[in-house]
Length: 222
Ligand code: MN3
Image (cartoon, rainbow, N blue to C red; front, side, top):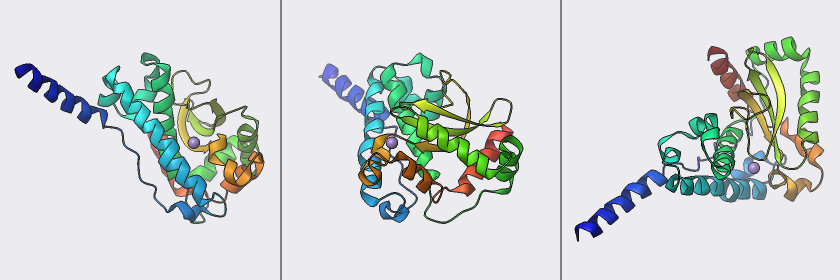
């Protein structure tokens, strides 16, 4: 009986720990990013793809207790200590949580500090866009394009494969993410099929520049 109670208690303790990572709600409706990103893509991307990263990450807590104890950001920053499955799913959870907040149905303009650093590090918004688009377009296979504040506090553009990101110590170029674009086919294929370039162009209409500015200000203080 005691043994049984212990097993039940352990089961509940584990279940509680395992349930730590949760799918965040979107700050807008699935249809609100249309025509740039369609409702069906948003729905599947959020409730199936992102949910799967969260569920698979929580399963890893059985092998790695730290998965339940740490934030997804901390896991990414210390990803060398974990398995490839943790790396992929923690990356997936972190990247998508960030990405949703970088999008908005409201038309926004780059903030003051963002423009200042874009002009300082890329000369103009046009050249900045051009370089970002190239990183997004030429990422072979599945991955992400990023704008980061690098370790010298300069803006830099990079890309990562799969669900890796620039806060992982394994990233080629490390830095604090300011802007990101998911270029996995699941992010655009229903509407754009093979035309990744059209999806990238559409992305510029739905960037939440207020959030970009907030991330930049935070990163400058780190
Ligand atoms: Mn995705």
